[in-house]
Image 1: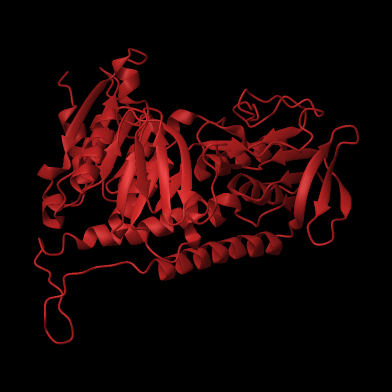
Image 2: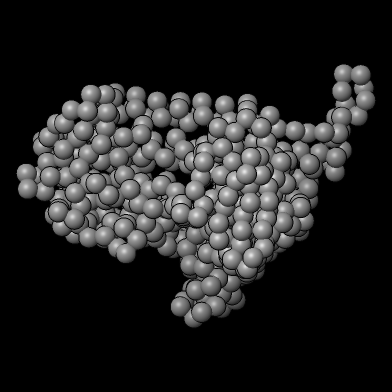
Length: 466
């Protein structure tokens, strides 16, 4: 029986453990923070739970337009909608802990051993040395393969140190009991914009400090423009081409100093400055495992590192830092090691979503790659404001875009902007991964009326008469 040791219990680790056990391996997971890792306990699950509440708040603003009004018990009009952040965050943390517990129970039922503590590789003895959290004792775990899935943590700067109360990383926001009166978010990437959008919809005044000329510089430009227009229309103050120099606190006031000398004051600040891999103290250098200049582990398309028998998956490898890609990389690693059929990771098939309001979902080649000439393709965008279901639901912002090969019509990319874009991207992702053509999409029945009908309509418009 092959022996597999996994260091880290996040999506890359626990999904790999399940696959390895299914394929007959003896599996040990060494986990420091709790099964599910940061994705479940401090990042993806908590943030998307918070965002779900904010999304409902956003939806409620359409009530009046749809003919819905509120009144109190005496029949007077009720006009104020507010979020009880203490209860919201209590629910967030309970859901995260419950999800972690579910994962731990699932692994235990499958006979997977869980060691709560930290692990490091002893390359000379081909062991993982685990330091147990409960007693500080060490044990050597014999293995035939190791998977490193230790994740990453928020990046901070010497001039902007979080205090966990007013100056916060994205992992620390769930201890707030009161809604911030003015939240300053530093960083306009996915994490920063998601929190900025959430707190705006929850009722905070929000200022977003963006070093680029628009939000979400790494996303589709059309999509980012739509989102920025919506956020500014809703009252967000977006400081474009502005860089943070320092963040300080005096009592209940937080001051963000910009490099051009300007200062922004608020009640709270979220630092969304990127991530640092958790790769120190693992014995990687001694094991011959190569790291890139950012400290991330270098891997190939089947999750192998530069050291024989050592694989890596998830945020500690950089790239697409998503729970879905971490889980897939972990599964691929174990299938490769244990001799099962395996398909190497193809990042062009990764569907990603920005959980703002509206959401932005993408898959495959991008508009920027088409515009630069990297790939030859046709693109077509159709705004949702003409969609019958969108009109019924009061949706006026958003679009569907397809990217296809000229001549063949094979779909190689797509973008959806709108409510629940994360659900609407899946058929486009299927098209990209299986090589479907725009005609095949166009000739597939859709429900009328439906938002997904816009995907079929874009495909019809991309049809070429031979």
